[in-house]
Image (cartoon, rainbow over all chains, first blue to last red; front, side):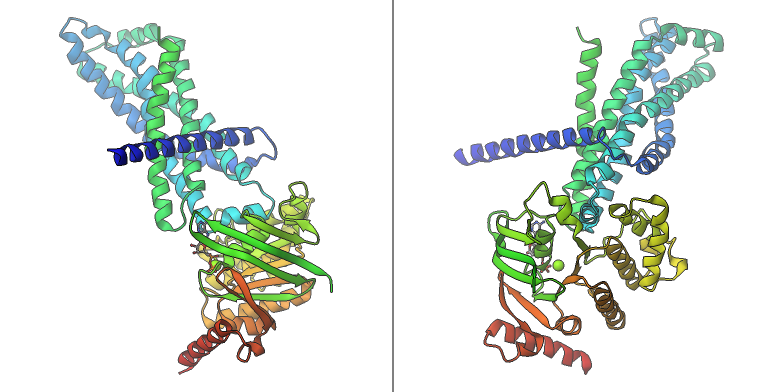
Length: 258
Length: 251
Ligand SMILES: Nc1ncnc2c1ncn2[C@@H]1O[C@H](COP(=O)(O)OP(=O)(O)O)[C@@H](O)[C@H]1O
Ligand SMILES: [Mg+2]
């Protein structure tokens, strides 16, 4: 009894310590985004790796999400004679929730893992020590460019997801559910409000921050050896996905709650 | 002679139980080439990292030209005295060989247009051909990586060069070539150097003053020739063991 309580206590303390550690790391990371020197070449390289190369998988996720959403909404809503609402439901769900969350989770899987693996292997192969010896602050050279990129590119990716997701819904509705093109488009434009899109983009920026920061954190404090890097990679993905879902709830409550 | 590096009772532990440096004291003179030998895992790399200030020491003090490693204000000045050739080279793998050296020159060369020229000069000085300049570290052999890492290390004009196991992972021939290159470089630049290794042949080749590390302390300092006849059992055994290995290799 006492033993299991002690174990529980130890885990709680360890978890809180870790959360505090991550918090301090993110504050340091965020602060280094605003203090020169800035490594613009690194930022551009990261934009390509993190942002541009994520476009295909984000687009693919979004189009299927939009398509299945249209089908399900049609089936579900015809049960109480609201089958016409497909266009509105699709555009609101995609811009508010599905676009940001799906894009966030896909990018978390792709990017936080690769960031953790890259920085972790730099730790293991002493490249981070080499930076320090050369008088280059690893926070400014490695971490700031990735965080900046995450915050800037995730909203753009979500915008792409929004457009493609709505298109997916449109395609299914027009080809399979007998909607007329003009009616669908006008209903979409009518239902969509700017707050839907804006809240989604704000979420995206927050997710971008979480994904890159957690990837950097786990890589930076990776245990030595190949296994250490492997564990760091897994932890980065798991924790950034969880953080995305938690932040998604909190931000939704903030925007639309009460 | 002026003392360049002074370590006074330096302690370093990891976690609860693992005490790696146990009150180690060491003095190295200006212009000296010092070798530190010890068994694998005895804390040689940790010692170098503490000396560089990239690993915090638990107790004691490290002074370089009178500047303490813990002196926050003068730390950039402290760090600028050093350059290190890491055990695994630690070349930045997202940059080409040339970019690695150019990037390092950011520490010393204000004029950006001169950096590339100087970098090419340094790469040529360590015997690398022009065709490897634009290759990535993963695309060149271990020996070439070592040379590139050396070019990067000397590019920043250090006063003290540190070599961490400079021949590990290389075949004996390449290892010998690299040893020669290191000795010539140190002589040419006239810098103070500290080399750590577990290989006594490397030690004998690079310098004649050697400190033996065991259980977190320097147990003996002297000439490599005197190792056989000295009074310290650990040193004698260490010397005998490496001779046995050399003989096995020769047969
Ligand atoms: N960052 C670290 N965290 C925990 N233990 C470490 C760390 N770095 C080194 N050690 C431990 O310190 C000891 C000495 O390591 P090291 O200095 O790398 O040995 P070597 O003499 O072969 O270079 C080893 O037992 C190693 O496990
Ligand atoms: Mg070592």
